[in-house]
Length: 411
Image (cartoon, rainbow, N blue to C red):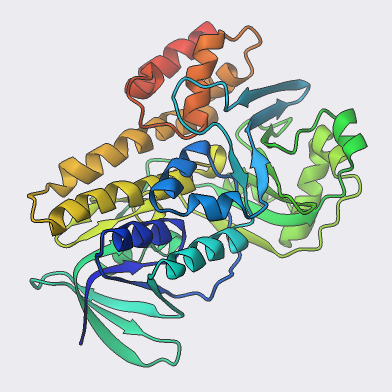
């Protein structure tokens, strides 16, 4: 039986950040990743708040120098309406720009940089069983050759994302209170010339969210990368997609033709890349931490991709969990619910309020309101930039109440 201080399940952004921070504090950890990097994933539009987490893990410089597409805001289109939020014009202090990243490249970069810092990552190692009832948890693993082994650790961080390893193995999963939705997505070689971008008022430095012209509960993302490729996806109810071809690419071609601006923008686009489909992704758990373990990012709770909150929550959870874990290893008394779960849920619940408001129409009314108050817009811009933990922002301190009041004023 192997011994280590911390086992981290998953080498995605939250796993790499957690491992790098622990290594800074001389806490031994082993990262178990079932895939082989690089691997295709979505969650490609980072938020400026992510940069703060990367700095704490000493990973920011590598990301900043990697040549990723700059992102300075978010644009929204619905029929003939257009608006945008500039993340450099926000209420909360901190980074105002970030990047739009192919996750295959980005995740491998973070993992490689963590390894350069001394982190041990074992690829194609699958966790098959976990015993958290003993004094020290024991993790059973199959390696890339299907050979079984065990590791005993002082603590486990589950950064397995949609794999949700501990929630599955420990029966922690609970139904989400968000309705089931589905996403179709692909990468396209977009062939958007500078002339076409100017003609259509298209800014590659922003993610664009399109509302379907006939169904406001359906939306598109358009995330441009720095090498002439962009990610495009469509999110709607499972019933909505029943009217479209089973082939993902054919369905996406048809759907992008239904949005007038996107149709013109994609007039020369080449749908030549791999595609994907995920459904029922919204998730919840009984608790975010238990005896000798904690859940990070999507392993604990995932809301919806609409505001790119997933990676931000994942990175913030790694930051918060390692702070508590370092204190614990230093002999301090910690309360994982009070010190980790409750602080993390401040941001999760803020994002949840605006996700719910997007789908019931309240937040769409706010986004497209033409006489927006500049100071209120800065506060909303802070949330869209990922600063959903800043309780000095009244739209974070009381998200549901403030959003409902603001939406009534925007009618």
